Length: 434
Image (cartoon, rainbow, N blue to C red; front, side):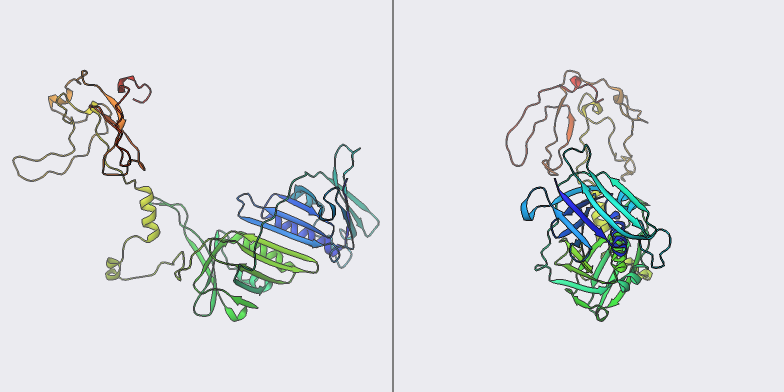
């Protein structure tokens, strides 16, 4: 049986409300870890790319704090999980009012009910109001095993610090529909906070229009700025906004620690027995060029010399253009002599010039607009139709395996193996494919 009791002042209860609002931006549930000397709220988002931990010191933050875990000895802990909205319904925004109006409280008493003779465990919160009214809330919790994200600050050589109030003014310029935030240290003594959304194109259709907002800040405005020049650190802009807004409620400085792109970044701040640490996954590169360059105007001569596609566009085009040879014509489209019934292109014998190639018909069985008598020639049923592997040397057969319907016995022959496998089944025996 665990023993957990603590008392909050109205100011401390209001800070609990603010931290729950912040953690609600990351996850719908909040985990609680109580030790003998500290009390911690943790949250992990659904994609497991952002972890938040807010620790309350047992001696400084609470007027009274007692925690005796049921097992684990001096290093034991009590852990549970609850819905964030359930706690927010208890710790409301107007718990502290300097004028003493309705809604203000005198103190907040919290305890955990975990007894062997009780059918259900409860997280009990009592709000003692100024008029002598006591509001009691009994919340159901779930026992979970809380895990923490590890971050080694000794490896994070890049760090900067700025007051949260100044950063709060900068994030007001970020668009509401932007998704990513690029923190870039330039060579001109400036740090650029660029929020943007990536353009997603599907053929000629643009699903998202790019939106870029950049805020340049002189490095002299930072309390501390030690960041490698030319490094791009990209994080989620919504996570950054939630962290800055909560740090501004404490009127403290926000500190950032990171080593290199694709490695975790940690934001840290605290005040009066409350320590907040947010560990976020990052992306980015070391190049000096921004990841989403703004379009530049150019004349017609410059446009003719400039490649029509950027590196990202070429990468997308490669991903949508399969590097595979044309399919082998099936036996059903060949006549009795083995020729194609619908050749792709023909040569004009009278003019001596090549006629433009005619597109192959989309007809499934018989080519359209075909006047030759041999187009209707019966299929030679004496020849065995088989299903084999396309082992042509014009592409990597191991990376792009394809099936071909050939009139002759196809055999499998890969570059790594000289083994030959004879066909084992006729195409006419395959049902449901044609």
